[in-house]
Length: 635
Image (cartoon, rainbow, N blue to C red):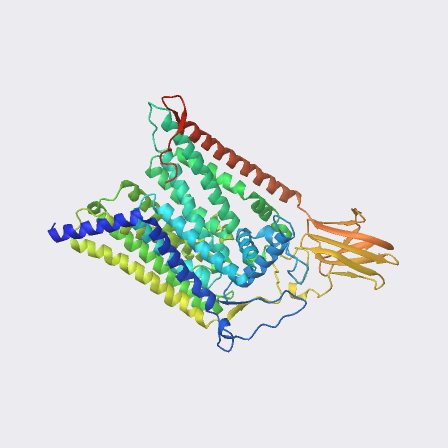
């Protein structure tokens, strides 16, 4: 090696050392990059006359009979209208004092919907938190999307650092942030719930890696210190995996299901490579505990599906029509550009994975990568290839073989998995560039050229194909009505637009008086005075969970056959009527299981800390206890 090359290597090592010693610089860079890719979205929408919201676009007309429309500068996307309606309804439920609001009071022309029994509510807790702080929905969405991007970047960096250097992990993180599908979810789909999956996938892999690593670490036979440390690490990793998996279920079930398919390949492969089959037991226990941590939502969502029109969930767009390169019919004609974008994104991710893997296997010997990285490359490659395969129609035999496989509608949601894998394998190539030993100049240039191409092509693809097209979209305006036909009770024979527009409470016979004292999403209180027996129609679907009392006694009820509203039979006189939306036996069971899972997780954490505390103190020469650092506690 020449003197000049020695000098350049020294400068490179010094630069890397500076990055390692100043992590604040990287954190600031990630914050800046996240802001650059996230924030323009909220200024891109325009009105029908071409003006932006901040350029004096005409205001939206308000109506007295519906919540005031909200005008936000972001462009119209696929899912934001639904999310916006649901986040507002969820906040109203929380504000009324209900910890888990399941009933949307203003949906379906005021007849309501049990949406949050079936839709993962985590994103709405987050939006409610920021709305409580800011009092503005536009600011809330900006904070939420930016926070999700920052959290996903932090999670990816944390996981990458298990095997990669700080510089290589930083490279993987940058690719993850600017990846096309990551930004498609925000800019074109408005899928803020699915966006949260980009946080949990790396964290799940992080704790799986820790569980298998700690399982494969042999304790020192001469001391009990290492054995205790090993045990406490295992407990923390188990709880961390359970919490991450449970959080992903609370955030977005379809992506969780699809990612679980990938885990079904990745985890056994990693256990085999590390010769640690026992670790699979602990991983299985953690996943089981994670399901328990989501039971308050998940168990009723699965068990009470028959109460709503769940058949419509996949009825309009069958799963088999969502395979890439074969999206025909069922409304996809109107999304030809979007379908083309998804196809190109599939090619883009797969190309990065295959080229990176080719470079890795060609140069892995001369660059001296560690055995841990070699293991991880096989694991990541299996996930990337599996996800890419399952997005094609040739994989349809797998869908037919696995029950409820179509819960992951759409198939192309697996682009989130290939996006994760592409970022990680780019990090591996960056590691080879940083850690090269005797690699020649030509190979070094090839590696650096690949990294530069990945960076520029990811940024260019996302900018030209994902971000800039949204400049011509009309800005988002909340809908006048929130209609959700999937959440209609199974026995309601009509569609939401056929529901009548009626008062919250009406008497069948015109004689009598009604006074509404309280009308909240989960509780209604009315006073009724009728000169003769009558019937009171409550503008609320008669759905399991609603209980009605007349003068503190169970009320005599019937149901409107045409649209399923609650009808209370009222004798002559003055009466007090109360309606409460309570948990069914299934919902109580889900909460009970969830509470038990939380208790188990806390006990495991407490046990782990107790072991750390016991080993983290020594007795000095004077007999006083002195705390000492616990090695490798959180690295």
